[in-house]
Image (cartoon, rainbow, N blue to C red; front, top):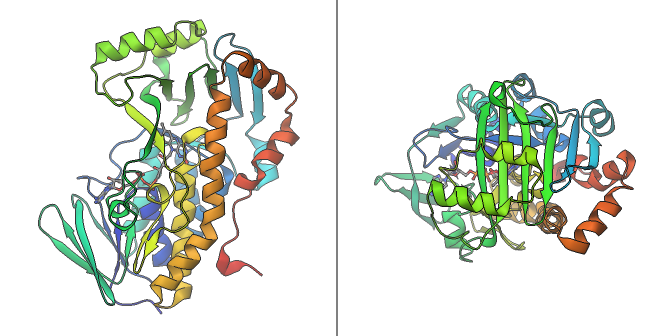
Amino acid sequence: MPTSDPILICGGGLGGLTAALALARRGWRSRVLEGADEFGAIGYGIQFGPNVFHVFERIGVTDAVMAAADCPPTLLMRDALTGDIRLAIPAGGAIRERFKHPYIIIHRIDLHHALLDACRRLREIELIPGVMVTGFEEHGDRVDVETADGRSFSGVALVGADGIRSFIRSKIIGDGEPRPIGYVAHRTIVPMADVAADVHRREVVLWSGPGFHIVHYPLRHGTLFNIVAVFRTSSHGQKGDVSSYRAELAETYRDAHPAMHDLLAMMDLERRWQIGDRDPIRHWHKGRIVLLGDAAHPPLQSLAQGACMAIEDGLCLAELIHAGNGDFAGAFRRFEAARLLRTARMQLESRTLWEIYHAEGIARDVRNATTAAWDQDYMYGCLAWVYDGFVLPTERG
Ligand SMILES: Cc1cc2nc3c(=O)[nH]c(=O)nc-3n(C[C@H](O)[C@H](O)[C@H](O)COP(=O)(O)OP(=O)(O)OC[C@H]3O[C@@H](n4cnc5c(N)ncnc54)[C@H](O)[C@@H]3O)c2cc1C
């Protein structure tokens, strides 16, 4: 039975909002505390595999998501030095036929708004922006939370959906900062009309180079172009300025295909993200406090599945809270058990794939020779554990 007191959710990212929607579907109230002044105000492009639609359908946002999304015809991997296409995975009708749902690319802001609009229609969900959680304490059957502006909130449980640098994790697990892997990312969105480079405009393209890559794809029905440049650098932990970043890019990508230089010339280098992940852990709850998404198990972005895992978590957690009937610690134990192997595999395989993307020398030759034999059936077979989705523990026969 849903309680009259709300569940507190720290973080209104994709995982936190999905949890709120999935809880409301079962009649549970939640209060989403978001540290930023606005929910979902910034973001770049994001890719979603068909597995995420199992969740979107249940929380009723598929139509809103599809109105803003595009389906790329193909996922291409190109060798960054020669430009040769090394892998072409059909991602249009064939993926939909095999995995029952589409592969999509969408502006993260548009996805966020699809979720936010759904939240705003439900009286069970209270969205509170501009509240950075700075403390919490469990007292018997409730959790009290404090925020940076001196406010306090009380709920029957606390969900830490506060991302890879989770404050809630720092208190209940205390395993420090994420693991930096020595790579950084720069992200840019430009009008499609400004893209002069001789590149694919409808596909998702990964240019795979020794110690660097670029991913690009269109957004908003071909009107925008999303570019992400990722590379290894010894300065990954330091803050530089645009001219030092520009010099680093010129050096790192010096042997890259000419089309990549045209793309790099369009990059906005004001902001840099350090790439990192965490080792899998077996437990991510303590009493009435639980983590989900990147706070619990952040992967590298090689499989483009971090947000998908956060969204799957949100539904799974809500279903188990509902089934737990007030036993939050028991529900959180079942949640960890249900999600551990899938999310840990995502973390570990993403690391392996990262090595393959950035292979150098003989390893690159081996990669190129090996991928030459990978056809659609083989690739779909490799991806089935991800794209087939997962069975909710509450629906297992
Ligand atoms: C370059 C790059 C590309 C990526 N591409 C993809 C992709 O194509 N597909 C995919 O599925 N994934 C992708 N990911 C991964 C994806 O971005 C994350 O896995 C996903 O955002 C995790 O969602 P989350 O809800 O767990 O956390 P977040 O999205 O990080 O949300 C956390 C929220 O908590 C808030 N918050 C933080 N601390 C506090 C606090 N103390 N109090 C209150 N609020 C707080 C934050 O403001 C934020 O809104 C990519 C990642 C990177 C770096």
